[in-house]
Image 1 (cartoon, helix red, strand yellow):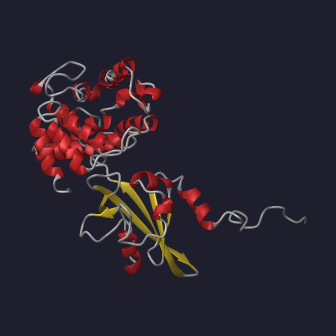
Image 2 (tube, one colour):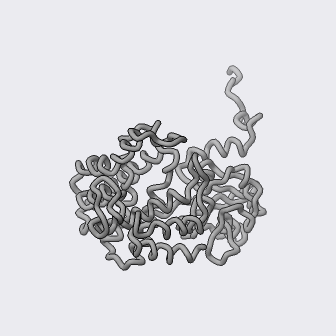
Image 3 (cartoon, helix red, strand yellow):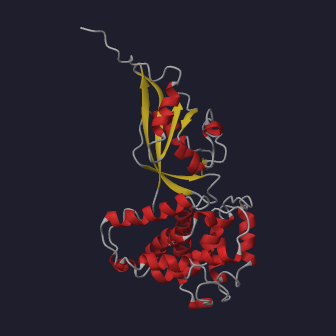
Length: 339
């Protein structure tokens, strides 16, 4: 029998490193993955963690629970995003889809995550823990959409998320934007006492509000300098383009007027129809505030993100002009909890 020329079992990590190999594998995982050692020090964060939390893996590596720059849980105040992993190491109990509130550099207010943890063993001893973090999507599990005339199949709801993610992939500055706008809009809708059906409609309109940007050239969407009048004219077309695209899906009929009017201004100087005040659909007025707030609190090529206090100041300054003043005051009451 001839000698095998296949490489030995360690060939993959020779000159590469076990963590480098693991990082490459976990980068393929469609979600946030964090790995810590037995001392609850972070040793690996995949690229989705970097994008979700706005921190490079270099900044995160070696951090301990309670010292995680810019990323922390809000319950109790002292915990961090490593708290679920530390708890698993201390108790030996692995978590299965545990809900945790997290606030990071990219999140002005906390959002809910679903966390699952697993212990890592080496030579029969606990060597660390791995955590899988998934952003909680408020209505993904909802099955009764009869009030919205929506089908009950999960595949069609997933199509909406796919549309939104396609927009984020083309526009450097709206990656995750639609989902945050939807979350903010739902906060407002709930505070206003809207019905469950209206709240669900608000969420899906938030997810879909920028779908018309799929028809705008990337050179305009990602232009670092000031737009020309012609480029701005094309940007102004995206609400109508979005409504036109969605008009081909008959079960989204209630979404169309909201999408088309989310850039109308309370004083009547917005687009595309020049509506004013309560002529603008209520959910469109909610989205206008949520959309502007997320834009202001997100880094752009022409300016860094505004602080929460600065964004609140801008909302107040534009109440009655760009925004419905009652919706602004409602959202500010919500935001002041986190100031």
